[in-house]
Length: 215
Image 1 (tube, rainbow, N blue to C red):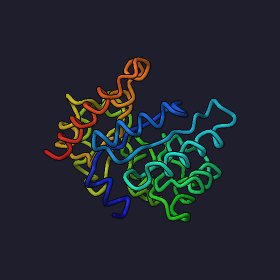
Image 2: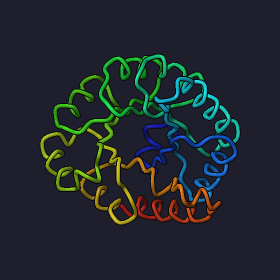
Image 3: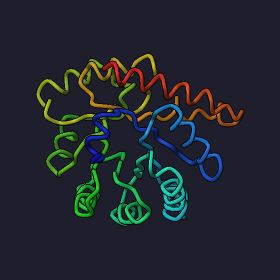
Image 4: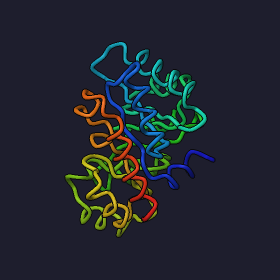
């Protein structure tokens, strides 16, 4: 399935930050068991070796789970990071901001572009630059009323809600017009990971999947 079609179908992208090695593999397995098939691996911009660290994680995950999961890179700020992500096996590029250079480089490399935006101006700038989706951030803070107001004049832009999405509000954002969501805290909970309670993360993933399927 084309990655854009899969995002529209699955509606859930788990956002993974600063998790590596065996812990990352266990998390990916937990997401598979929870029927979540899209994972974003973020570049840790505070790490000068982030391109190597994230690239190696993506390559490892793709080799292990590539038949059941599709991977993207997140917090992508430069064209160099876009190219590195593609070389590692990513299919979609997610950014916290609207960078025409990153969007253009993503599209030129055959990758799905998902920049982050908040205002109507930012959202339309991203769309006009060629973005396939726009990550609305911080969605949890902005709320569903904001989504409805934004979508009234620009309903042609596909929005992914990100930031503060959980079981209690995910369905509301879908009903408000978002086509999916990027979810971090609930699916990568540090306490669960520290306790080795990956079964709980799988349970939460299944709950998100049920909400996505119902909406």
